[in-house]
Image (cartoon, rainbow, N blue to C red):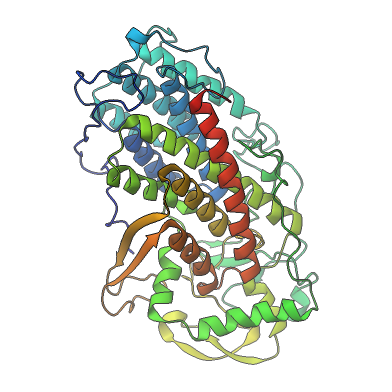
Length: 496
């Protein structure tokens, strides 16, 4: 579904795009006599999102990568601000007032962005080379602090060096396989895998309230049984949280309780009665393979705000620094819960609870064939067959946490909940059911809160999450968002 037409995307991965000027600095450190400089923060954010779509990492890895890139950009920028301090070298890179020009900031930020992007997505080097070429800059190996490129390299390297040992296992050094981001904690699912297109016997559920792997055929025609993505993520060093479990909620509904059955029944009933709009909501927010994933979605919204509010680079660098680190912390807190509770997804819970019953649902033809009488042991969510359910535990919802953290930062940064944005879903464009929508359908959000709430509900409409997972995820996101924004502001106000 072509759902990104409503956003202004600099054509890093396509044809060349004009680079809008940003005007003078709002921090008092740039000269109004200087020529306007390109909006490099948005440009590099766009490049990073293009790399995400190509590389296809897991959601918490995306959140971390975007935070590293924008922290490196921020730390390079801080060297040319009168009061801001960097996250790693604090005020050690501060340049004299005469050097605090808009052009020097742009060069330093771009060099930092290039180095950080390449560190996170080395196979996507062509995207970053193109961005530098668009800016008319050359990649530099200098570490001379008297040169803006040297500041960029110093800032980026300090962030990269710190994050190398943050528990993410980005370089694979914590496992014998050497695989990037591989689990080193020995996690193993307690349930055997079930086949998505089959029916699941009761014997396949030794632990019915725990996560179960799913075997399916992906878009390339390959049969896969993905493992739990990033079960070690609770060990990653956060930005602002005191620990990965700081905001852990209470447990989800327990097995053999009325609440456990009720939450599954709610999802079955929701899918039977989905409206066309709700189906569009489910797919618009899905952010599955080939997208920028949920953490990147809110970066796109930040780009909208940057344009709407006519940000210069000084505002953009602060906004994206706060946003990406808030979303990063939300991912750590969420994955800590996912690993701690190891909770069952709706597809497994419903197949277990309604195993011997005949219910309404999607049969072998999937959503395009409509609702039919099916065995509960073969229940399917409203999703594409090639990616039916994300490969990690349900509780809590990552979509809900990422979205609540993003909304919290955007509200705080703009001092308003007003969003005023929309997305039009083209007719007959849904992947799960290409007969929908019958005509173009517009989703609109007057506020960031509305967008956040819709993002959370989309996972219930899609049959991916339970209500408790959504609500607990939103709570995590609000708390991590507020805490990360407060810490980011202390950095740029020089009080951290």
